[in-house]
Length: 293
Image (cartoon, rainbow, N blue to C red; front, side, top):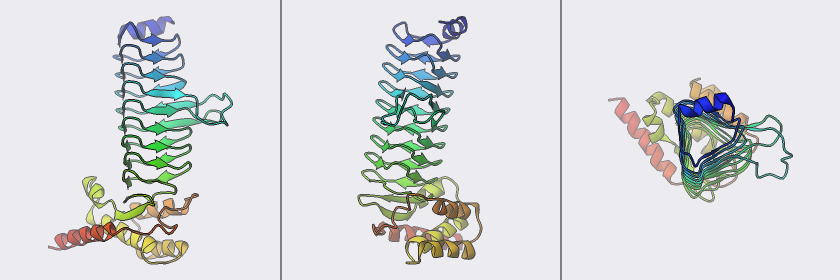
């Protein structure tokens, strides 16, 4: 153990049964509980808490004020036959909660990274596979699982027991309900669930909670209708959204997300729209009535 490592540990709360390999970098006021294992290439920033029996391996960095709960396994080798011993990374942001038995693997391909943003909540038994990227304030409920190369954007929520196919993207503020199967990209600002996956329209309650004004919600609702309800060809629907809707940042993001989709958008493979979409439209109409009073 290096002298700097010893100095850092003296400024932290390290249980004597924890195993910390020489080379690990430990910030100030770090707590490491009994029987946790911290391997040599790990970096724990200030105020990190590693609870009992957690196992942190690989070139893993855990940001300030993040808590890793008992029996979580982070930074271990990717569960992929393509892995050939490359140097890869895991980076977890600030103020995250990684709950019990979560597994976060490292990546494949030299210098690639699995990245989790700030203020994320990853509930018990979730799995995040190689080359996946999560934005800020993402929530994954119990047993949600991400295959390799998945991207989950800021403020998205994934319900429990939901597998997400490799290379899928889930857009910002999207809400994916539990017991779903996500095989294609989920556009931002939407809500849906089920097997097969069915949309409920916009995530209106979530958007209101996050301060999206009525005009933005109305324009996004129109974008959703043009893409999913108008029976227009995909590109024709996007062209009409560009021409007919206000050029709000959220509308531009919607168009960009749809055009950049490589797996295709979920709900455009014949799964249909649920009756809940009608209820969501009613909510928007209630908003409009209230806004005009």
